[in-house]
Length: 298
Image (cartoon, rainbow, N blue to C red):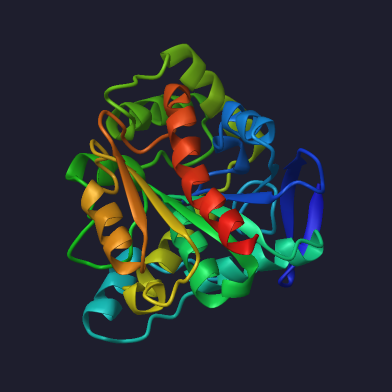
């Protein structure tokens, strides 16, 4: 399904009863809505929530900003180091406005907002810049933009930035499997055949490398967001894998330390993905702040 929101079209999926408390799922860099595992969606519905997952701008089946220039990463980093305001098509705050626009289009006043990785950054900015729209915030394997924390290991950065060029499906599937082995959860290894099938499914749904570059530019140009995060008033849960090499756990700890009253759950053996085995623990942590909000509102 598509909705017109914040001047773009957003592809979304909607599960559960319309009158249940809404949970908005926001995915990360270059990741389509399909990366939210269906067992997680199903379990949220079983717990009594209406679940909306969607494609961010420039990914999946949502609007692609083909007219926008894709900035060179080296130029962008150099501008940031010199204190020059970078020229990028959009920032994390603009993607947060997309999320709020989707809530508007669906007639949803307030939602529990759950974000993973870059989606966690977007969710944080929804809570910071649109506080009246957020019932609770759950930030999963994300960070604050503080340059002193949350930096990827060289191996993790390599699989993030050295993707195959072109449209060779087999090369992309092989890279996706390799990337999962590098950044995934060492305590919960994925079945390789299932992983390859998932990567192939997503490649066939949409392959759009230019969008990943523009999203990366948005992350870099948005810089340190801690001053905005200090204003967040929503009940907040930070969830982070202790063994995450892409956004190390220090990024999650900095998030929890920055947002007033935030709680943090650190999970041994978890990397930068959502193993099905861990979904109940992740949702229990989410519900800790979701229930806190319900108690306050009642």
